[in-house]
Image (tube, rainbow, N blue to C red; front, side):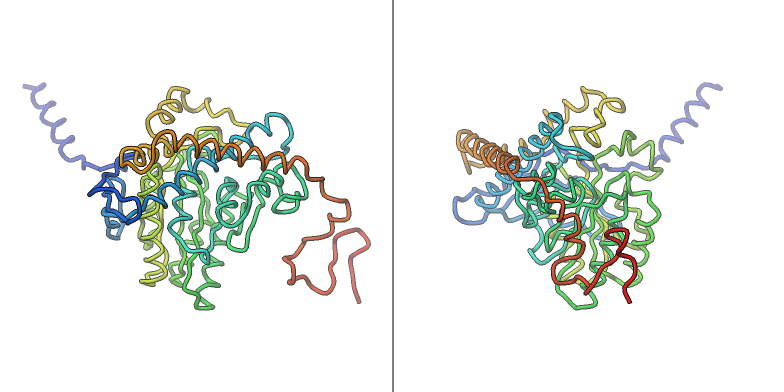
Length: 399
């Protein structure tokens, strides 16, 4: 009798537990709706579990794509991975000094983001910034040169891995979470000047618990700024899993009154659709800020000093590489939909490798900064004051 009563109580507890659908992160679950076309757009359908929402509607699952865009995405993803692999090799050869954080495995986020926004939109991120710097108008030579500390670098060899910028890309920021209020400030400027643009402010799951992040959320919602707060949730912070550091790992729900959207960050078609939804929310519909969480995965460690295997198993990393790789997922779409052959894609891979190899050699050949350049580039060209102080000991006062 007592065992039956205990079983009944257990069943009651189980029945009260709500069923929570989780985001799926498979890279190749989007389905072709009709025949693919060589020159005309065609329709595909994103898997329903590629999105989860918080106080907002899901994006449309039916998406129009083109052959040229998918091939362009593939080319960019391969090139960005090759660039990061080259940075990895240069660091291990002790040609790169200081910090270096690579985004191998997360290519769908950067490339998908770029394809979902306009050239006039603004982007700011943390230190895992190399692909975004190139996609936002920089060059591979400029990124590699910056890592090597050469004049060809995008910051003339004086910024390093974490400080790379373009007119629409505000870095590359080294302080954990500090770019989030900066991104809100950029969005404030856009609203103040009535620009029809928005700012995508990226941060990682490790920075999601920073107080300044929530302060930025509050001000952004208070003033309804055109800011999309983007959490790149790659499952692990600096040596710590998200579950060990965050009581709520559904980061898209943590904006209080700011609605949120969680997206499969391994499927580039889902990423682009999520970005376009977020941009429409902030710019066209003028609904204020939105939280966007991309569930993705990094193959390497947090930085080059982290082997990445002390808090997760090698088997887990290998399983993600072999079953959920974003580039392989896009490759499967292209091949199965008859957009390009395996040989044609291999040629794209070879071209990407050649492009990066050439850029590395150009960066290596560039000279190191001149000593006199230590006192330059303090301000963006054209914005510097008539005099400066603090560059050397005697430069203190001016009367």
